[in-house]
Length: 253
Image (cartoon, rainbow, N blue to C red; front, side, top):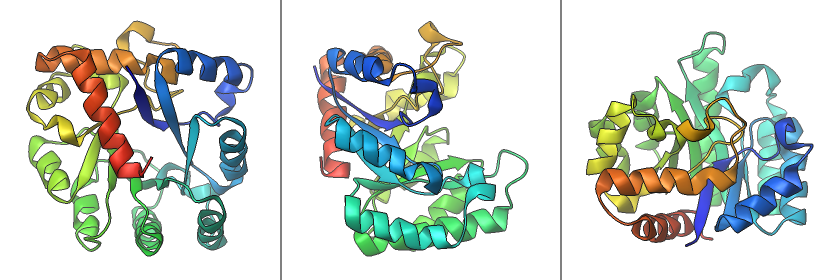
């Protein structure tokens, strides 16, 4: 069986001491691709280096809403430049985080829309971070009917899920669904169309329940797929095959 990790941060310093080993474990676990989503412009070059060195890596470049103090206006111009040069699979990780204190909401929204405009111009999908902001994200996405993408670590309602799917978006699920206390998410996974689901790790964050407290990594992705299979009463191979197809279709892999 083959898998694609639709959302990882393998450029993070947590992997500096054993990144090659982590990537080899991912290959052995059946991963075909690992999409590495950016957070700040100062780390884009690290993602580029990873993609150039490891064929398993696919890049996405963007400005994450949780790091507003790191972003400059000129980074938007640089984003367009790196898209032209590197031809990433997506613009991401972008979005809105209205859960944490600190980042100015109006500034987040402005930056989010500016990056949607860039993705729309380059006809690239977007990888969206949305916490306590899904209704606003939905409102903005409706302004860009040609845009497609994924909602990373989806945690919204069934109604919001259906609205996003109707817009042509996919929903990413990872480690959080493996915890039995995540009753809402687990129930949601029994009713959503498998054709709209992506697998992700968000590594090094959000490990599954069997690796609680540890550094998450892409090789753990089949554990997430198995939980989805169990919740839906279908085979692991069915989940692997369909989510692989979904990810390839969205990101043109």
